[in-house]
Length: 194
Image 1 (cartoon, one colour):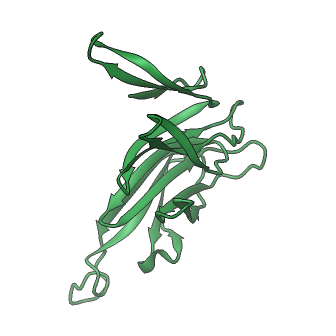
Image 2 (cartoon, rainbow, N blue to C red):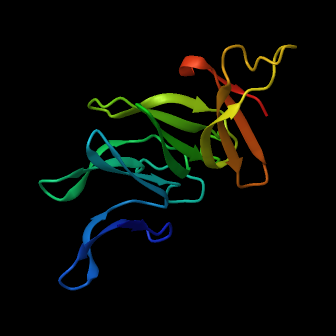
């Protein structure tokens, strides 16, 4: 079990002690302003993604990272950092061989930007590599899904040969509503649709 308190800072990992019938602290990972945790398995290894809004409201943090569980030490080890300008949310998306990590970022006071990031699992040394950047506005959550295509021809054929299209939905927590980004085939380009 892993948990974090945004105002308390660190991520605490607990392990069940069957003899004492309770959870005990197994590891304390230093962090600042934790806003999201996502546990997942990839390539036979357990991982924990930790994202942070930073030490001050809206500030960027260099402490967002992905940790891999080392079975020899029974501890999570940092595998790499994620560049997150004020991360607010993290979610893993898996479909077949495709593994994506979605990181929503709120407004970064330092740069006045509001982008969110999608990282792709490559299984190599870096494991998650930048896949594309979403021009989101103060995103508090992201979802990746496939939706039925709109009819594009008179005979009712949906989106040519495709029956669905992939989209990322970004939800703003500051009254900005929702943004929908269409991902073109082969994930080559992102188009804001709403």
